Image 1: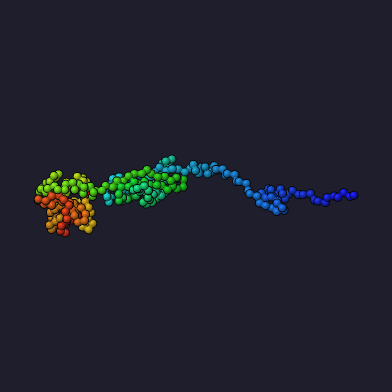
Image 2 (image 1 turned 180 degrees about the vertical axis):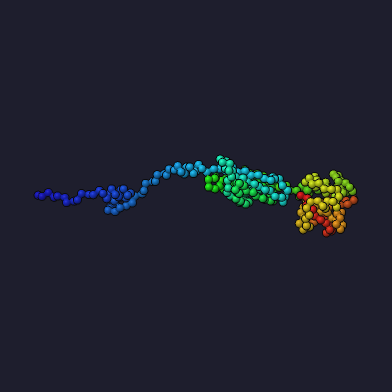
Length: 270
């Protein structure tokens, strides 16, 4: 009986070692890829930390030429950006934003000059809150200013309210209130009380005050002076829709009356 000897060659481990080192396994004679191990988190480099630390938050300030205006007037907003660490100007784009309700809206965007200043000229249609926002730039973070309220005074409403207070007052020549009025005495009294505007006690003189406005552009609260030729003979306050508040003549009372004739001038006092 002969002993059988094995002629099998010894296995080589080199391929397996290489496969394992490449993240592969040998299955049924085939190399199969295995899932890679999770990558280790990349540490924050010293350079990245230095860049973050170098970002500066500028100091932003706003100034206003006025915070309370009459309707139709303008407001100038001046924004200045300064590097608080060096005291030098910061340049970049600045947004002027307004808010009448809950939401802020961008009115306009401007770039600062070399002194870090941007100037905005606005004409608000009503009372609004203002603020500015610096968008940020290389080395500087974005920043916004505090909000400021700009109040628009409704002078027309004040004038008409004062005019209506004296409804029914009896006309009296040369009287200027508060219980009796002639025509120019009435307009003189109302404008002074409502908006602090001083007028002379004479219709012909009153037509020279304020700004001349065309008849087609007259607005509520404007002074109306009727004329004979070029001489002012009667004064009233425009109430809209072809009516005016006035103290008409002897025996009549203060009220809102239909305008008459076409020979008149319009003066805007506020």
